[in-house]
Every structure is written in C-alpha cells, then in structure tokens.
Length: 107
Image (cartoon, rainbow, N blue to C red; front, side, top):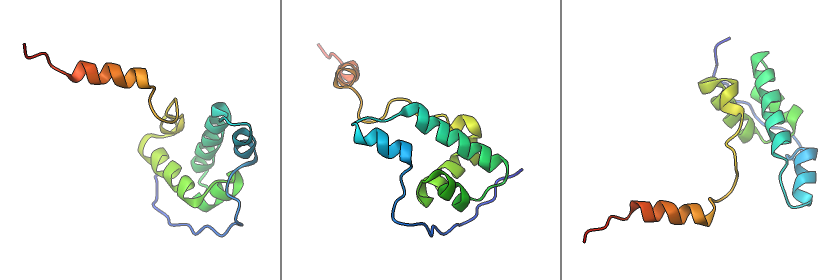
C-alpha cells in the first residue's frame, strides 16, 4: 500500500502521553524497549491502513508524533521506526575526542 499524505485533526483530551511513558518518567528514566514496541505497533497499524489520528488515539501520543512516525514509515518502512539509540546529549568524553580530532597541528 502506498503512502498518502493525509492531515488528521487531533481531538483528544489534554493527556497525550501513554501510561508506560508516564510511569517511566515518574521514576526518572525511559523504558526504551517499551517506546520501541509502541513505534512498532504504529508501523503495524500503518501497514493495515490506519490513519494517523487513529494511531495517535490508540497509542496515546500527540498528532505531531503520529505524523512524524508516519513520515518515517513512508520514507523507510519499519526500520525507520526502530529507534535512534541513546537519547539526550552526547557524552562529554565523546565530544572531547571529536573536537580534538578536528584540530590540526600546524607546527
């Protein structure tokens, strides 16, 4: 099935986060496997022809997130939704190595 660009209007209540995400944030971390599984569920729904608004409602995410997942799914299929690995800023030691490798010795 080809990808069609469809605009969906979010008409949900004020809460947009899923239960697992809210629970993980409450203890100060993220459950990356649960987040990956939710994206894979979205991919299965898109495979079956679900609309972005239906994915947003079913999975408890914002319309913007469902739209971002849909574009990624259209561009790269399921592999595009597997995840980006570590979240947040890069580790400082990595930044130091990159910056020192970019410097050139002119002497």
